[in-house]
Length: 173
Image 1: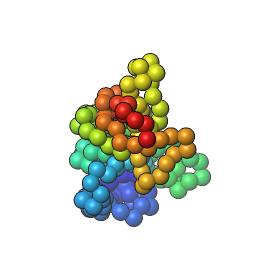
Image 2: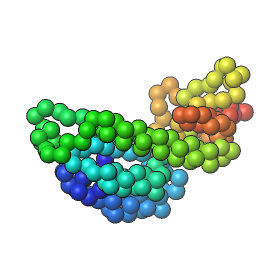
Image 3: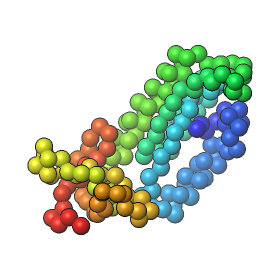
């Protein structure tokens, strides 16, 4: 949810940026092509501008394939709601927007690198408006087969705002 040691400690999370960097490096080494996804929380009580900047640098360095980011929202009766140094709502929202803009650029760059490559994918359907030339792709995970969907190898054909599409195979597996 964050990378700064103090923010993580305040969230009662038992890790820090170095532990996360080590974990991600080990995963990328052992599983080439792994897709890293995460969800971050910004504006947690006490988060400073410097701590947010550290998180933004961590996101840039890590280059997650997929990332969500949410602004902290105060929940009555929680420990966090009683903490001092609540971050202003507008600041929380702005920080979340900044990180998501940053992530959109990262994801676009990572997706562009994949155009023209082949990948194992879950085929989510064909685009009839495109003359059945494009198939929506979602990377296939752990050998499972989603109900009503077909698995197969596809060449990544196009880059779209929210992902990639693939070309129709000669024979549907």
